[in-house]
Structure formats: structure tokens, C-alpha cells
Amino acid sequence: MRIIIFSKKHIFFIIFTFAITFLFGEFIHNHSFTGDISTEQHISLDYKPKLQYSYIINDYKLFDLVGIFDFQLLSDFENIEYEHELYRAWIRYCTAQTETRIGRQKINFGPAKILRNLRWFDTINHLDPRGESEGVSALLSRYYFLNNSNIWVWGIFGSNELKGNETIAGQENTLEPGFRIQIPFKNSELAFSYHNRKRADNLYENRLGLDIFCDYYLGMWSELSTTITADSIDYLLTFGTDYTFPILSGLHLLAENNTDWQADEVINISAVMIDLPIGLLDSISLTGLYNYQENISRFALAWQRSYDRFSFNLSTLISDSNNESERDVKLILAYDF
Image (cartoon, rainbow, N blue to C red):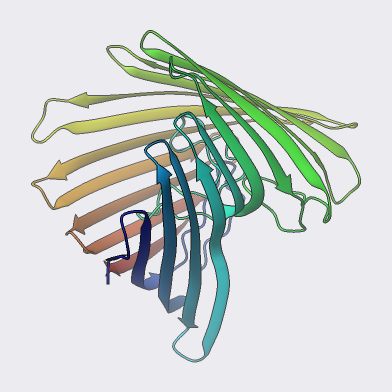
């Protein structure tokens, strides 16, 4: 079932997503290459039913609520495990220029595509064709000005779970406030972000973010993130650019470089991604990352075919570190109904 309409003002959606994932080595990545690559073979069945109810108050006001559940069967071809969780659950109220949402939701921002310094709250991985992310429990409100400027204000409910690119969890029963201001000008957009939280080690942490995106002859962007605590200050800076060449159906080239100034070292990482659509249904992409200080390189090659409800994604990841190589394969079959 896709849509059931009870009246002009009441709309109820039921959407189901069923995905089969064959993993011959789990893809785990973050910009500092601290994730491991597993070589165990396993398969997972992922089922996500989504329920949505919307009430249209008038032409400018809307109230809706969403619940998404995640059910998984995991098998390493010897044992089978069952897992389930509440993936999304939020209530939203919208007007012509405002949006307020409370509950478990996805909060993400920033122009970077691979080396994302502003991945404060989401777990989106550029290698994941579905772009899925763990959610956070929060109150988020946005106001949109008529000139396309906008202000975000949020309060995230603290928990002992890591979110985004955190390495130390927050404290439970606390509220983590923050805001973001985005200002467009000509073919560009400038934004400033701020977030405050109390960590599990009882230190208060302040995060400051500044990002800019420009779309002229080339797409160009930059993200600067600063993390300040009582005993340290860390800086992350990313520069990126992309361009689509008039080759075949449009050859897209993207490059990013990230510098991480930590307390005792500086880490530089570069990333390049090439993707090319083939016809209306297929696309291929090649991604490469290199960590200069640790001499680690990773390459991912992916092919995706997409229909209206069904998608097929086959990818392989090659990792090389200190003359040791690992190769992993991932197959995802997904169907929406």
C-alpha cells in the first residue's frame, strides 16, 4: 500500500522498505580512518515499515507525525541474530516560514560530501547508496526568511550513545543546545553553527562551525570546525570542489582535502570521487582516499541500477596499509512497496 486518503485534510501513508544486504567484509569509514574493516562474511535482512499521518490545517499550516521501525535479521552463515529498534519517530508542525519537529530524527548540514567536519549528529556514509543515518532525539525548529536565509535552533537530549563524529559520548538527562544561521548571497551560501554539550567525562564541549559554498564555474566549498574543551582545542578544515564534464552522460569529478590539527599531531587526508551515469538506470562511481601521515589508502568502486521501487548496488572496497591489502565486497538489494 502506498497512500490511503480518508478526507481532504487527513492523509495516512504506509510505506515499507525491504533490503537484503550481502556483506563480504563490512564497510566502516570515517575521515580519520579509525574504523576497522571486518573480513567476516554475513548477510542481513532489513525491514523498515514507515507510518505517516498528516493533517492539513489550511493552505499554510500542516501537522504530521512519522514512525519508522527497523527490524533486522543478521547471519554469519552459522548463527542468526534478530535486532530491532525505533529508527525515526517525530511530530512536526509547519507553517509557510517555520518548521518545528520533536522526536528521533536526522539532523545534518554542511556542503562537504566525503570529509565532513560538520558531521556532528549524523552517521551518513558516502559509500552507502541509501544514505541512512542513526537519528538523535531532539527538538529542532527552523525559520525561513523570504530571501532564503534561515535559522535553525535545536536542543538534543543527551545520551550515552555516540553521535556523528564524536569520540566521547554525552551525559544522559542533559540538554545540548545549539543553532545554525545560513545566509545566501549571489551564487553562494555562508553558514555559522554552534553546539554545546556536557560529555561523559564531565567536561563541557563547545563546537563552532563555519562553512561556505560557492557555485560559479566550479562548485567550491569549505568547512571549518573547532572543538573547544577545558584541556584542548582541535581544528578541522576541509576544502572541496567539483565539476561535471560534458563527457558521455556527464562525468562528475569531486575532490576534497581535510586537515586535522590535533593536540600532538597534524593529519592530512585527501579524497577524490568520480561518478558517471550510464543511461537512465545505471551509474558507476570510483572513490579514493589517502591518509598521508599513516600511509593508508582506500578505493571503492560501485555500480548501481535503480528502478522505480527496486535498486541494486554492488561495490568493492580495497584498503592498503603498510603493504597489507584487504578487499571487501558488498551487495545491496532494496525494494520499496
